[in-house]
Image (cartoon, rainbow, N blue to C red):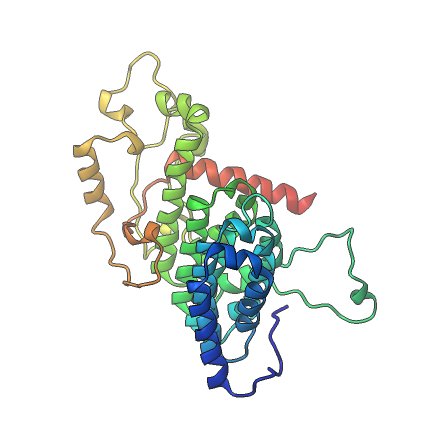
Length: 346
């Protein structure tokens, strides 16, 4: 559950805030050799500030932790989990800007625990408990575990939910050890398709499209025959439909959100009976085809400009009309949906 210092030794909030500025300036001036000699003390100070009850100290601690993690990534391998655990109270804070700053700090911690402790960070965030391990405390009193990933997925502030889903996509695109993190991230990213805010749900759809593009580049050999022969018949309900992912729980976008209708797939045309233009896929369109596709998708929506936005989301085009998901998106969703279902029922 969220950890916070109930009664700090220094009662004055202004003094604690100035101490936070002093620690941040000191860590920036110290050399890597000096940081290495006092790494325990440095991480302890940052963790204490992150658990401070004063919201300005929390915001300053998140900024300090971000710069500290990015500047000293190599020596913080075994400190990634304690640093991320200290941010739990910030992830559930009443101020939206504190929750957003905590997400940026968690992302910085993920760069420190690559291939070693990142999966443990996600286990803390999603309240995962090994059924074969029961803490001794649980025999004597109740133990509360908070699923922070679920809490952020249904956050009361739209800006936090938007940034949360953008952060999930950022982890999928940029994290080196995303293979270990995909089973944790995929279910919560798919939750964004059913967000109550229509614009956020649309953005999540196009974020999944971007992840699908990266999936196609990684699994190029596995998808080569499918793309060359156009054999996606199994994805069209027997050739009867060609629809996008259900948005906001409504099939094909419902009445409010339109989608691009296409003829159903019929499998590969080995004998060449179909016209040449029907062999082109949306993934392989030329320049003229892309312009025609943009006309069918409509003018892209203007997303709110934010200083804290990830670079991957800044150049994202969110169109109001939904096309059929690209092959990589469909394959990525199918793979992780099956894994999630098997893990749930096993």
